Image (tube, rainbow, N blue to C red; front, side):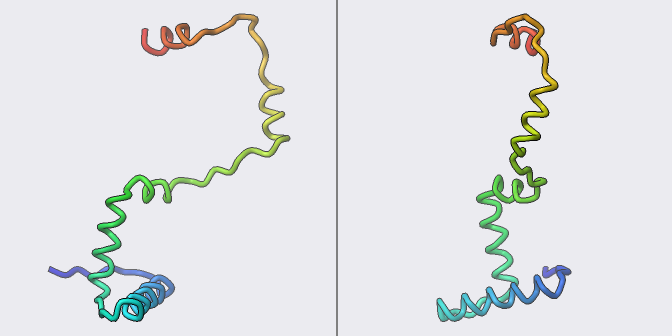
Length: 91
């Protein structure tokens, strides 16, 4: 059962260019349905990459921002070990 997928004109044009490039390079005609099915298969195989592509981009902090963050930190005078952290987190 075929279902239609709505996409904007730019995405449709890019899909058509990709479809044409496949035909030029392989000599084989592929339908947009076949092309989308293959794209989905490949996306599922690299699901983590696909999911990450939808995350908000985080750029590294500028040096001034990093310094401002560390200036707000104060020493409590107590040394904290990994065991202390584990005790707090895991009991």
